Image 1 (cartoon, each protein chain N blue to C red):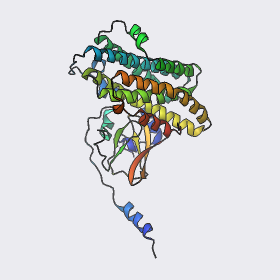
Image 2 (cartoon, helix red, strand yellow):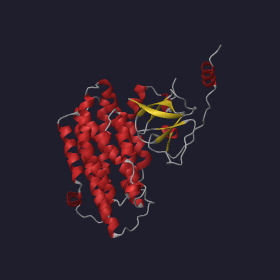
Image 3 (tube, rainbow over the protein chains, first blue to last red):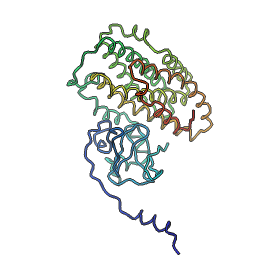
Image 4 (cartoon, chains in turn blue, green):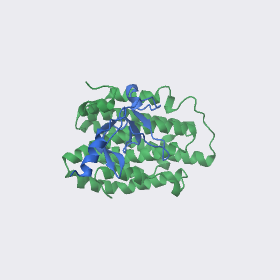
Length: 98
Length: 258
């Protein structure tokens, strides 16, 4: 008999990642070629898209051309941090890797 | 082959060397400082402040000048004993940032009618902040890299980042515009500190206890400064930004618990 927990996870992982076309956001704190990969956090009413993560160090939103998942690594250029995405209580959080 | 315009596809070494370069700094600050004399857009209109607001702002700017002078003197001194060339180059960009911050703050004070800024700073400076500055410069004089980074790039920069960000949301338009440019610089300074110290603590965990003692000593000075500054700005206790949220979260990520 197959354990349902073992079958559910691979199905989730097989789902292809969505791709995103990034537009300029007005973020201007990194060199031009990198600017569309970041945006300002607009406060408590703001929400993150599936391709976005909030940098815990400098509170800038990091954006990716692909949907982000736990285990992904992204870079926050405005504060020079390397981050790894982890899932906690069903939420995707960015943690600093030193 | 990786796409060099997608930062997330850079290797760790390429990322590290890119963001610590003068080239990166130059292109970054160009985005938010170009065409903005003294950090303020020419289209930003100044408004008249009443006497109480003006006095409060001058005292606050005097204290910002103390913090920025501390960071200017400390970061320039730290270049001499920085452990590698990336840190030396990064600190050279921080020195330029801090010098600029001091200049725009003094310029704003002059706009507010302060004729002798040095005398005003001497008269109005927060005693806890002055003590903090002395301790920071002691660490630099002792060529103590870890303590200097903790005091300057983690503690002081985190305090400035939180206060300036909050103040830019409530200040008059010219001061707010100037502060937003400073906050953009502070992100790099703060991130450098946390990441450098984080790597060092992983390699030398025995330094943790020593740094924890230093943090405890400096905490009181930082929190006193924070409370006094927000009092000068007339921010109600209930509406004060959560320094504990930013600062304690940063030090907790480094493994320091209060």
